[in-house]
Image (cartoon, rainbow, N blue to C red):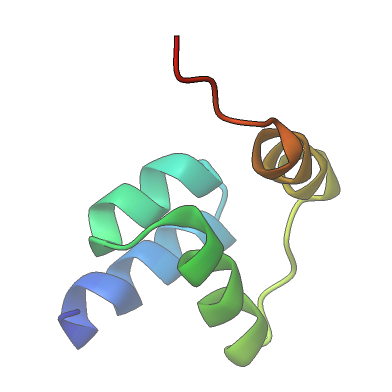
Length: 64
């Protein structure tokens, strides 16, 4: 992961310009890793996005 891309994504997320999903994509990492990076950098996560992420993580994968 390139630091500049991550830094830019963190800044854009923090300013409300990008959603969690958009910022993670811009940083080139998955949303779970982006959440970890937000926490490491002391950036508050919008609770509605965190709740949405939990629901997505809890949904079982289907093979049909």
